[in-house]
Image (cartoon, rainbow, N blue to C red; front, side, top):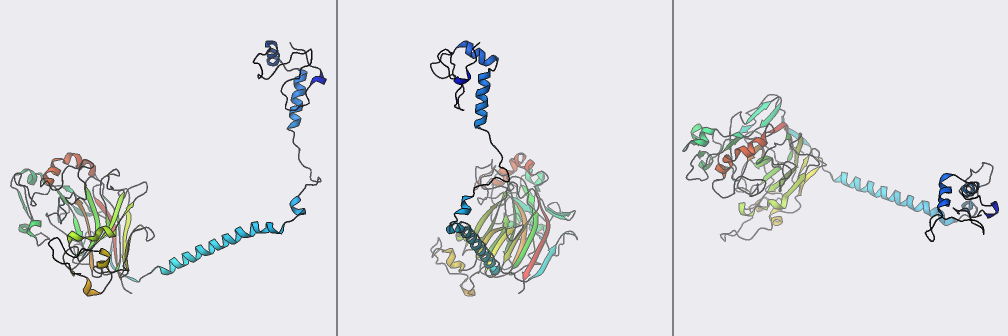
Length: 456
């Protein structure tokens, strides 16, 4: 045991952690120094607390002692004694900045609201399917030719592919009849059936010919395409479609518009308005699956010079897909602008302002590939928004596959190659891979369709 150090030998330093040894004492340290520590000192420190160590602890505690100021005790406030008149600006300047910021924000909001055009609209169609599928309004198109995109589906007039159930319209793709697909030489002739919607014979006849594949090859799937072509159209106005897009590989849903008449020439000279297009593939698809939609305007002197890429915008759903629940897909169209939106006019997808003639905006070449000089097909109107200045009707459809590049070769296990001439047969042969992905969600579901004509 180490004897207690005399009180006179206790250090006055409150930071001291060891006794200060005298001539006859055995000093010990906190572990620093020459590295040798008396073993008995360590034993003493670990076994008990001496009176000297208690006095050391007391000194250390006094060093950190705090006290509460009594109410009657004076408190120094030097900033009140010597006031600097400049200090008030420390408060005034931030307040002025805050006021100016709020004023500028208010002005910008007012300017934005004052420029919003609220047209007067008159209802043209308020469809909620409460009376079932109204064939006096909705026209089921029947074709097999691919609609210019090399699509694989045969669009039918059958309720197998377009029907109303529990107040909801379903546009559902299904497999082609196996008898037609497996019988060599089988023919599907829509003209003979009296149901073909096209004047082009190539769009009315399909043949199962395994040795001579061509554009007449049998369609491996059936689907639906309905329109208001013969009933409802608008020239300027608004359309809103509440729908849930389909889920499944190689499905191509679309809600879009075409002109009632080709006033300015064949497509795309008379225009096309795509309110919403998507793909049924999952979110990992490189070009965007069912989590992405796009809106597009098609316009140009011919198909080789379609300026769609100048008026095309994509929109991505956040943490979900457009196949998970219903969304409202809308368009507002006037002589000065066209814009599309999802769920609210504030959530704009595509906005095109007609502040310049589209012929000038398109920057088209002087001549086509054959050397024939282009003539502006829209010059005669004098309107900046031509060809989007004449009546359009509404189309809703679910396409399947294509050969126009909408589905990129070699991506996501695409079972056909564009331009191979065997695309439809290759797609059919791989049906065990893509058909299960359609399940019960392979249909586009539509709750309502609303059309208004601008009438101011």
